[in-house]
Length: 161
Image (cartoon, rainbow, N blue to C red; front, side, top):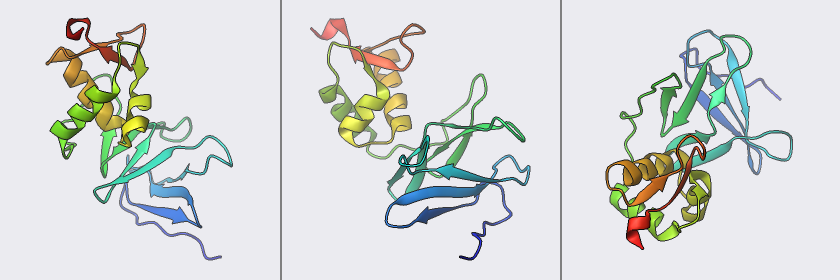
């Protein structure tokens, strides 16, 4: 089999599929020159989830290199988001945000649920669901945020009872 070629531009990628999605091969987005192979096949080892919504690639969870340049980033709707202390994700546009808010609220209960559970239930990208859950908790007060004790967990606000 011929080698997989990726572009030399940081962040360029190809998706390898043989009946199922196997991996994403990409040039490290930080420009170090390394080629990363991100496993998508849970039958082989720890695997990332691959999402293709509105013809844009997202991966979950984040990619955190423990060798080489040690970069840490999120691939979210074809955008690289660098994970730093206060990473900014405003550049990522979520289509049908109002519709997704309604679907999230109809899925949430008064029990704590992790945003990945909610995303799975409504078949959406976890990064989208996490952002909208935070908006519903902080700005609209329709959800409660689990805070540091329950990081990433949300439930319907007690004020909704």
